[in-house]
Amino acid sequence: MKVRHILYIGLAAASCLLAACEKEDVTGGGNKKPVNPGTGTGTGTGNTSGDPYADLSKYGPLKSYVDREAYPSFILGVAIDGGSKLYDLAGQNFDEMTAGNAMKHSSVVKSDGTMDFSGVRNFLAAAHARGITVYGHTLAWHSQQQNTYLNGLIQDKMVELPESTGETVLLEADFNDGKHPFSGWGNGSALTVSDGAFKATNPSEKQQWEVQFAHDFSRAFLNGEEYKLKFRIKGSGSGKLGAGFQIVDGYKSAGDFPEVQFGTDWKDVEITCRCNAAGATRLVFSYGAFAGDVYMDDFSFIQPDASYEVISMTPEEKKSVLTAAMERWIAGMMEVTATKVSAWDVVNEAISGSDYDRDGYYDLQSAKWGEANCFYWQDYLGSEDYVRIAIALARKYYEQYGGTKPLKLFINDYNLESDWDDNKKLRSLIHWIEVWESDGVTKVDGIGTQMHISYYENPTTQASKKEHVVKMLQLMADTGKLVKISELDMGYVNNAGETLKTSQLTARQHRAMADYYEFIVRKYFEIVPPAQQYGITQWCPLDSPDNSFWRAGEPVGLWDLNYNRKCAYAGFANGLAGGE
Image (cartoon, rainbow, N blue to C red; front, side):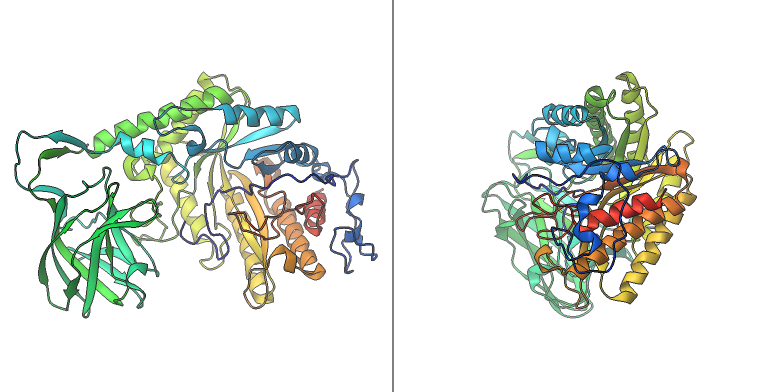
């Protein structure tokens, strides 16, 4: 995942996965107005000190605070992964549910390509039973895809030969076209092409394995077979380069080539290695111990004495096959949901956080600079066609399978409120939407901003965060498109820069988070015109348990793990009421 936000680590669109508690939930009732938060010392979980936060039963259900006449399009949502108690909580307090995982590609599509929509149907039924709608998440993403199936569709084919025919070149590049076949990671390293040569840049010395570049093959290397690397190499100084085979699952080694020493002059290299384990698909290079630039040219990766021929699909063939796979997936999902779900994250997290081509805008996510174990549709369908195809298929099959309400399709992404780049990711997304819509056919209805944020105790930092939340909402509103806060949750960072766990928070810190929730919700109503308001979705209803993979142990919920309302609940309610 890259670092999405200083505190957002892991899968962008992950869910809380919180287990239901047997203790009775505190949901209140009636159409009660919020009380003034006050300045006392209560935490909002049973304290009777006189702090208005201490008696959160005075608050009504969250959705009762939305002025439906003034804001008829506003939808208050929550992300849920399952459990009757969480479903009940959603029905009592929200208008809509988003599935944390149930409607994602890897949750439905199996490794053989078959699709199981039982989880989707169960989720729809749970929402229907509680009288609330469902927001679709998500049709096209690079994470949580069924990689085994998708990679299998485009993998190279091996054709046995009657006898050995000598060397077979598995990968080669002279880099004269300005492109390279590698992805890389570690220590802020960068991969580029300079003057017709591949360049890998490591800004500072690390352990050798901490900075790498690699190429992933669609089929495994043969256990026991010998392979050859040939290339020219030099560096901005003297250093060493390691190379080897790797099994991606568990990052296990399957054999290492002899280490290559290099200096500032070009050096010809020819080395061999025998693959010593089954299942290796990655050729990986390590150079973390060298700080500077490593240059490579005239690269080839060879299997000597081949007994078979490798037949690869052309880029056009891969695009055709994967477009058909996307069509089958979206058609299947629409067949199940079209009469029940009329709004979708059609494309999730398309924008990277770097401007690799230096055109002033961040590029799309790609295997060239993205994470391992993801499937980047855009690498095969194209940066422009990727979104156009997904949108066209969603509209086609929504109508074909009986969707009657206007279909609303959103591009959803994270770090759009970022202050470190003055909202550049959002500005880049707006640029890309203009590109996608330039065909005169494609229409993006709205933008979703995830907002996996934190309250910062440092007043200067927090002021900057708030300023850029306001900028974000204004930029989104200025597009004229629907505006949705799609995955709101919040942590806490103290003056020392430490991320605090729920158990560490003081009453004052709880109230600070509540105030920030109120600020965000109020600004949404103030800045976004009613006609452009889709609404706000709270991503985590409950705090995260210590064993969660999502912001483990952090105070991300509006309720605690015992289903007691928190100060954050009051802040959220006050913000909703402030919109009236």
